[in-house]
Amino acid sequence: MGALGSANPVVSGYLELSEIATPTAPAADTLRLYAVDHGTDTRLAYRNSSGGERILTNEAGINWTKREADTDLMKWRSVCYGNGLFVAVANDGTGNRVMTSPDGINWTKREADTDLMKWRSVCYGNGLFVAVASAGTGNRVMTSPDGINWTARAADTDSMVWYAVCYGNGLFVAVAFDGTGNRVMTSPDGINWTKRTADTDSMGWVSVCYGNGLFVAVANAGTGNRVMTSGSLDSVSTSDVHRFHGNQSIVSGYLELNEITEPDAGAADTARLFLKDNGSGKTQLCVRFSSGATQVIATQP
Image 1 (cartoon, rainbow, N blue to C red):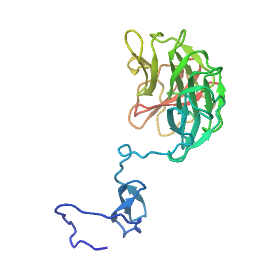
Image 2: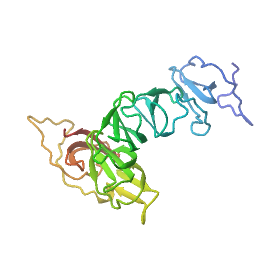
Image 3: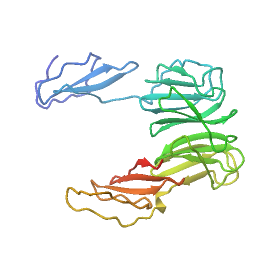
Image 4: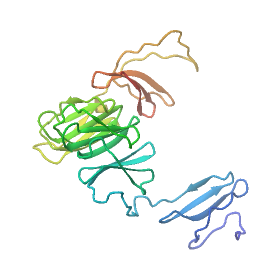
């Protein structure tokens, strides 16, 4: 490879790189910039003196490639990713209505516990895949720890037209498009479900998500507002907490915590340990980081 004879070379125009195999590591305190074939496109990358490599450009999400599904006649409705696996569910078609892929390219059919159900949505959270159905006889929820082996679960209202499910803040939340009564249900574990009163139970809820401490659902049918929220951080109140001083603290025996509303974020590089009710009568041990993120550590069985 040619070398430029200046410590600070300047290129007038552009520098063109042709695709090559990954180069060997360069001398200490230097980088090697190169172009590499990445299957369907070219990526700009570098390799450092320790042998580390990094892709600098990525056209993911811009250029799309069709992939062959194991059952192309299925009506796939939802896909999610978790624990190193993509999982898709279908609401119609002959045979298995679940397929999985480790890379999004190669797909394998999986036998669901109830393959005649109209699966509408699937999500991943807390080590579990959870899918909900809009129609079918019997249980309209199924769960899987690995995306391969599925178990039917009894929803609190199996006649509801469940359209979407998501996971956030230690809770699975599902919303329904149609059905009599409450069109929201929640579960701390994906197995035991509880109906919840929505602000407008006559709305046709079609999607729900979680972010920034808030569940948000939207509807495509119904009279009035077609958005509802739950768990707004605007309504969070705080309470005083005890602090230990110094770099280390030792408790001989146990440390007792009482349930409180979620505290605000603490000072930089701190975390706040607290107990709260998850909304279904179960106590959760949580930690709130200075970044504002909250993580559930354990849920009362």
